[in-house]
Length: 142
Image: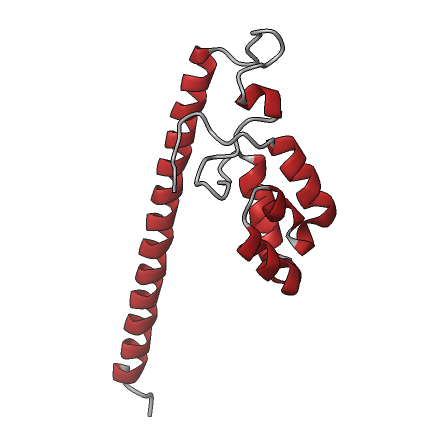
């Protein structure tokens, strides 16, 4: 796998459009060079819709990777090749840095929410155990 900061030369817009229209058959994966998983997705009808939905979310947020392991992050193919509208940049470097910082914060928040959910589940389970133990020890009225 070739991991590159430049990203894939494939268009995220085309992949997302293909995925929205024919994604249940894995067409977006064929476009991105992932033939094997494209066939699997076609046979399972997009993993009964779950795999397809996951792909659409990951594609929309620019985290999907092509067959070479490069992120499909450019909306148009000419952006990936460096011919983005006569040298015009869609987003400045500051905006991209801020976006990366926000992504890191969101990832940290996801971890915190996951930890809190596990902690609450464990606390709830402990309380249920204590309640059942109390019920067993409680004297019965005569």
